[in-house]
Length: 47
Image 1 (cartoon, rainbow, N blue to C red):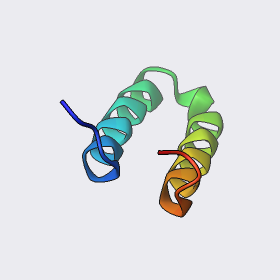
Image 2 (spheres, rainbow, N blue to C red; image 1 turned 30 degrees about the vertical axis):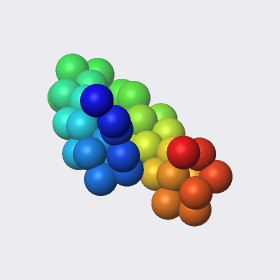
Image 3 (tube, rainbow, N blue to C red; image 1 turned 90 degrees about the horizontal axis):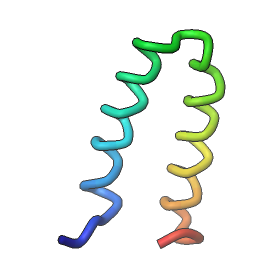
Image 4 (cartoon, rainbow, N blue to C red; image 1 turned 180 degrees about the vertical axis):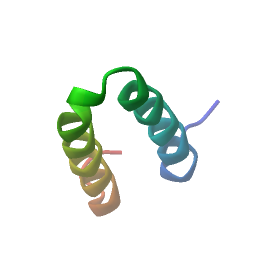
């Protein structure tokens, strides 16, 4: 199975949404990590 940006983004969003629901005080960290990874993937720095 090959994971691409289009299939990975919704999966990561779902996992982070569940984690935010369980641990709401980690919201800022999870969003920051998601945005950094999403930006690096979008720029092609991480494949």
